[in-house]
Amino acid sequence: MKQRLNYTQDAPEALKALLALENYSSKQSGLEPRIIHLLKLRASQINGCAYCVDMHSKEARHSGLSPQWINMVSVWRESPVFDARERAVLEWTEALTNLPASMAPDSAFEPLKAFFTNAQIVNLTVAIGTINIWNRIAVGFRLQHPVDVETRAA
Image (tube, rainbow, N blue to C red):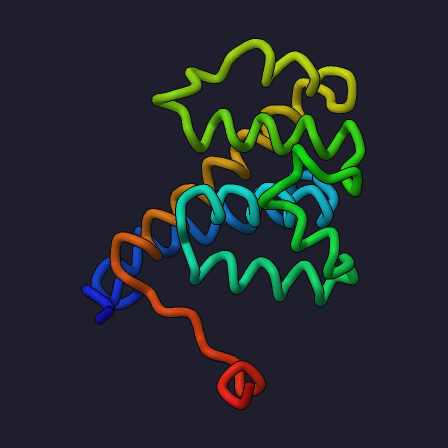
């Protein structure tokens, strides 16, 4: 696959705006890194974004999250490694990422209220929207993730 265009050069103001949103949702929203990693990884998996799955898996490992926790994100319903709070985030992430099919049902929204304030729910929603924008850029413009040296040697 060949990258379709260089979005960083072709529309620098769009990138600047997106980076501001990314900075807010990841660093200024008050949401802890574990939750940010969780929603970014799950949305990227749903959207089939290899570039983002690679990046966010590595970032999660670098932040100290266990390989098992990271590996089980794609099958979270069948794994006991996620607590009720994380499950609420995963459910909301899936509902918003699959919005045309889900229509963000009450069953995905209501569990959030047990763990998050209204402001935090807004920030979660903005973070989910932000990673979905990144996924659309990476998939739409065919960004390629790097292949690790140890992967090539295996």
